[in-house]
Image 1 (spheres, rainbow, N blue to C red):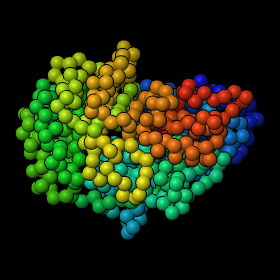
Image 2: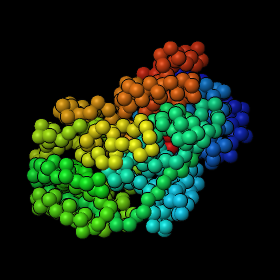
Image 3: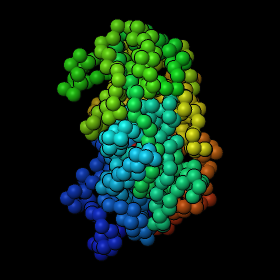
Image 4: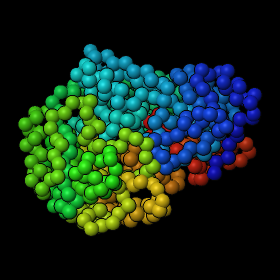
Length: 491
């Protein structure tokens, strides 16, 4: 457990309240629990203090206050990626930072740290534009992008972070920086994929794209046809052009009213597909998968950008989940057999969703110079989600481990940080970055955050010789209980 200083009584809290405009909460205050609650209900944050920032000045003042007291700081907007719980310190909520503007002539957007993709998608659509959102528009734009951001149309456009123009960052001493490829270029390199290591991003500017000629949706097959559908998918994806993105999900759907009646309580295979370009070509390209097995439902066709949520059908209400993700270099016969052993017909699995998502195309190379986004050298992302409720929750780590072990021959050494899931130690939470990226992050960490204030979440530690001493006790970085994934740095 991390040792850290804490605030001392009402006088200290009053100092913070007088220096900021947003609300300050202690655990005894009404509103504290709702302020720290995450979308992932399996994670219960327990900070010493919660603060609802209204703007960058608020964030800067709160960080300076925390720094004077040796208090670590975590950040959350939506908490979709709250895979590990925050214990102690200050949690800064950015959900009130809702600045949003679009320049339709330049095709750019500017967002505050609390803006969700849904707001961007809806406003951009009025100008015939779209942003590079992922499988759900309910997540925060900034946290999603800091982890790279894997869009629905990623194979055509690349990661969302490839199209960032500028970040506005508050560092551990409260300094506000503008970060672009020309102004603070090393930070620009590290923030695109570096998640919550180096400070708090309070605003971001990025490019938008024309929203015309979209064809997308899903095709559902009975789970009994999993072997044929997976084999067809394996043969189909190598021929896909960059305009097309696809994934295959093994879904064991619960008996819930939110699930369409034909699919409720069933084991199904869900092909997710998105294409931008000639609509007839998009439909024709999908035919080999439509013919792979009798389908239960075909929900593909021309799509408005405002309807992207219908492709993956992610839940829009808070749920308790545990997740695990890793990367694959190939989908060969051995890997396919391993997937079917764990998720095929007749298998009893507590995993609600196991998704195989095609990478490559524009995802393989940054359009804005170097960055540290994980997954550029991988062929597929493999991602598992399970409902974290008794008695299942206790067996999930072993289940996830077994799947990873069986797929290890085809696996990549790294992970995609936004889909990494729960991490177990300091080494695991750094796996999203290769050795070179880790070293550059550690160097920047030592310069910008020498006392390791931002020690929560998927972050690298300080170089060993520079471990901070707080309250005369060494911070045990390997034992820090942290907030992971998109929960940290503005998700």
